[in-house]
Image 1 (tube, rainbow, N blue to C red):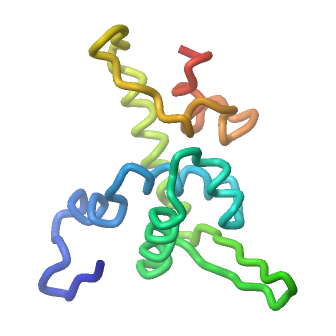
Image 2 (cartoon, rainbow, N blue to C red):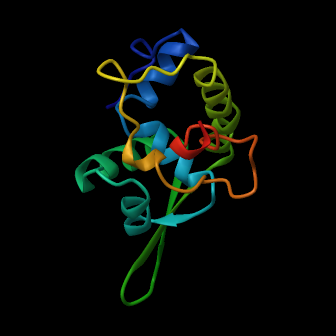
Amino acid sequence: MSFSADQWPECGIARFLTLLDGPWATLVIRELLNGPMRFGDLMKALPGVSAHTLTSRLRRFETYGLVTRTAYPEIPPRVEYELTPVGHGLRSVLDAMNDWAGTVPRIDGEHAVPVPASCSGVSPFPGDRDSIAADLLPARR
């Protein structure tokens, strides 16, 4: 996905949604907020994501300056993905999303929205109860 200057959305929310569209985009960012990660580690942290989808999101984030990709000249090759300062700026956005989600009444039964598998583990911010995902874990509700 690319946009020329005349196609790039003027609205900041539209830009955000353009860059972080899809069900995995914000979860990839959430994981990278912990620090640099290898592709395989991201796959393990996000059960259910396909290699194709993860590759697509990482390439988009790299193109738009949210993520850097560092390939180390080793055998076997090692590649790490890390948020740039612009990418780290999303922490407050995701924290705000988490805070808002905590205000939505929980619904059980047939109308309940299933919790993604990637949200059912340990908080991605150990010891940081005020950060994202800490309140989204089923054991914490």
